[in-house]
Image (cartoon, rainbow, N blue to C red; front, side, top):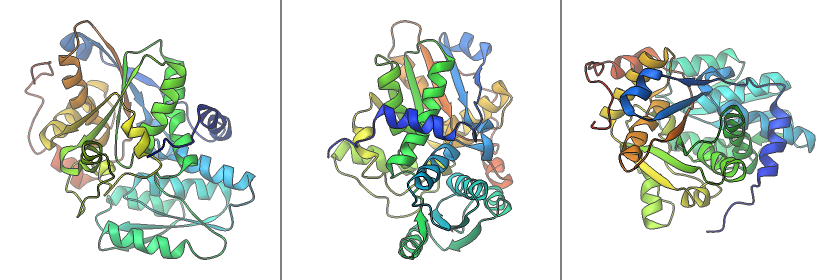
Length: 333
C-alpha cells in the first residue's frame, strides 16, 4: 500500500489555518515520575484543548479548507464515539453550518451532552457499524460534507499540528508516543516528527482488546474488528484503521498493545501525578513507554500525547474500581 500523499507542508498550512481557533496546549511533567523511572517524561496536554481533545484540530482544518475551496456547503455530518463528535459540532458552530452526528448508543454521556450543547443533532444507533452505514447514506445528499474521524488527508494534517506545536515547545526528544484508534493522530505525528526531528522514534499504542491496528500490521493488510470492543480506552475503540492512515502506521518505529489493568493503572497515576483529568485512551500510552524504556541502555527523554480528557461518571467508576495507587510506578511493573 503506497504512503499517503500528505506532506509536512500540509501540516504547516493546517497550523496557520486553525491557529485563531485552537489553544496552544501546555507541556506537563512530573519530577516524581521522572525520579521513579530514571527517565524524563513530558506530556503534551491536549486534554486542555477546546472540546477537551486533539480532535478539534482535524475537524477545523477540514472545514476551513473546504470553505476555502468552496466545498463546505450548509451541513456537515460525522460518525463518532465522542471526541470527534464534539469537535465537529463545535467547528460547525464556529463556521455557522448545521451538524448531525451519528453514533452508537454506548457513546459517553458527557461527550453526547457536549455534542448537543454545541448545537449538533445526535442520531444514535444500536452499534457503531450501523452508525457508520447511516452516515454513508446521508453523505450522498447535496450540500453535505462528510467529516471522517481519521481517514482523510485534511483531518490527518490538522492532527499533525499537535506534534508540530509540541516539538516547538521542547528541545529534542528521543521518542514520542501517541494512542491509536483510527490512526489519524499517529499519522500526523509521524509526518511532523520526521520533518522536525528525524532521529526521534515514533511509537503507536493500542488497547489489547481493540487491537485491529496491531493485527493489521502483523498481517500487512487492514483488519477489522467483528464487534465493538469493550475497552476502557473508548477513544481507541474503532473497528479498523483507514486506507489513508495504515501506510503511516506501517512506517512507525514501534507499536504496543496494552491490557485493561495497565490502562486503569496509568489513568489513576497520571491523574494523581499531573493533577489533570486524562482519558484512559491518553494514559494507555504510558504502558508502552514502560515497555520501551526497559530496552533502553541510557536515560531517555520521552514525549507522550495526552489526547483528551473527557470521562463520564460510569467510566470513572470503572477506572477506580481497584486502587492502583498502592503500587508505585517503576520499570519493573
